[in-house]
Length: 511
Image 1 (cartoon, rainbow, N blue to C red):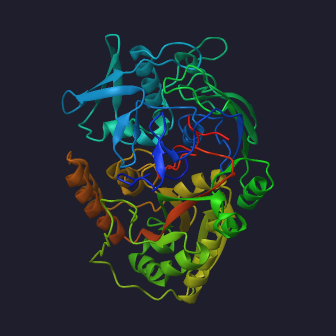
Image 2 (image 1 turned 90 degrees about the vertical axis):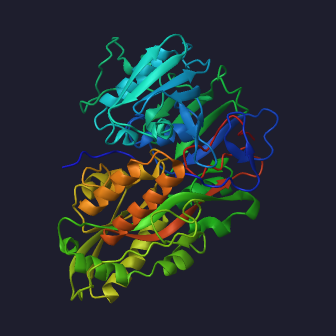
Image 3 (image 1 turned 135 degrees about the vertical axis):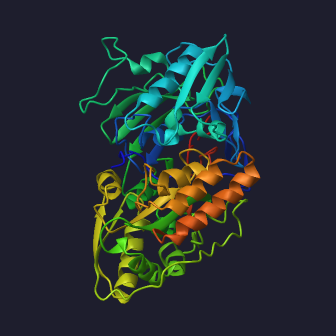
């Protein structure tokens, strides 16, 4: 059985910058108007910490969104790898890359050195399970002189600079990996290695205090290499209920509310709402290994029963595009692509086939999507039992194949910024986040072929061909390509409108 990855779903290459966005001092896109300094910001987040803020699972993105952690690289508005803690890099060979570090400090006051960077990457490779960006990758790092780090992979990896932008490969100070007694092999109560990002990261804000899974206090890191943040700190509340998040913004309790439900969009003033095209695709994943959908003809019947346009128009109220594939229309290299997989089996009548359909409620539209699909599948002859849980209580069972079908929203480039790595992790026999449990030789061959391409254009073409192979299995039915809605107080400036969903608050964010 594949190991369970604790993470939320996932930012695509080559997304165009949003109109009206500018470059912050750290290079991120943000709203116009961040000028003078500001006080503390109050932020409502949709997903609470699930693993005590471990950088190796779902909480990695939470840390990066709040401006706590950084990696060697980051993604620019077009999906390319650009400098972060590494100011430059060169490819030495098929397997080796040399990264030159910028002058920077960790939040504990120590310098970002080649030895510290190599140690942080080594700890990530030993995590169990490893970060999603390292799925199928064997990586080693070693310091070279005063400012450089050599990163070597077991096999050639053209996507390595993109991979190192992953929130799961954030660079932390050596202190982060020690227990209070000074051991470097500390463990949590469940036996996993202990990693503490509080005061040990490199971002513009440092994690100072947490209250379980409900609140967090962050202070400004005054020695941040990218310049002094405008806000003096962040007071964060984790509010899973989307209506409650929106009400907190409307009532003046918070300054920023991420992921406003579509159903609540009309309750906010137009000036308060930010709509962000993203790489997030909502899809129906069918269990291809066990249960009724192990039969390709039954999967075909389910696919034919789905009317995705009704979901985009009704459930998302026009704040989404009808699903045409795994890669949405916001991607320049996939724009206009409408895959037409051939060779699919003919659908067989459902005849009251009983299936269990599961989803999670952290993203408020998903239960409604599941209810509409339940009706569509019932109309086609299926008997559908619906289960809705909180994401952290659903993921393990979903990956273990405990459901016949799962509705999930996946930001396809969140983990690595590389479409081929996403396809490998989600749809190959050895994939670690394979909700559809696809294991198909043709898919594996197509993904491997795409992975062998180093040129960006060729890699994208091969990724689209691999996408077609995945869709041919009917293990996944694309539903909608999402746009994320954020609620932003009228006095707030500089909220980062990130199509990859990796950042939200940065140096330019203030009120």
